[in-house]
Image 1 (spheres, rainbow, N blue to C red):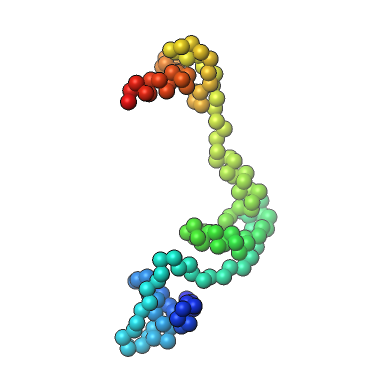
Image 2: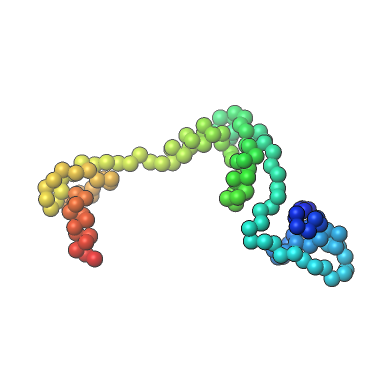
Length: 139
């Protein structure tokens, strides 16, 4: 992979074993080479083009835009998206389970409340205010 860094105007190639760049015209030379350290904030100057992919679920063709490819590269994602945006949203929604709200009567004060779980029979269930009081006493 050859990359031109604006500051030195030489095509450089990354060594396989380090984070340094070697001028291409010296890469196979027996002459001792000067390497250039890779700056901390350096982003590879890869240019992306829009690509058309096929969804694995519905078979529809969808656009994998250059900006999405840049986003994937910045996040370190190595795989391309398999699903179109509609199927991706449907898949995410299926992964997120519906939150269970259960009506209860507080074991301490007797107030009606809802909790985000299904209570286990035989264990005391507290409303939010009693729960916070009990937690404050414990710490």
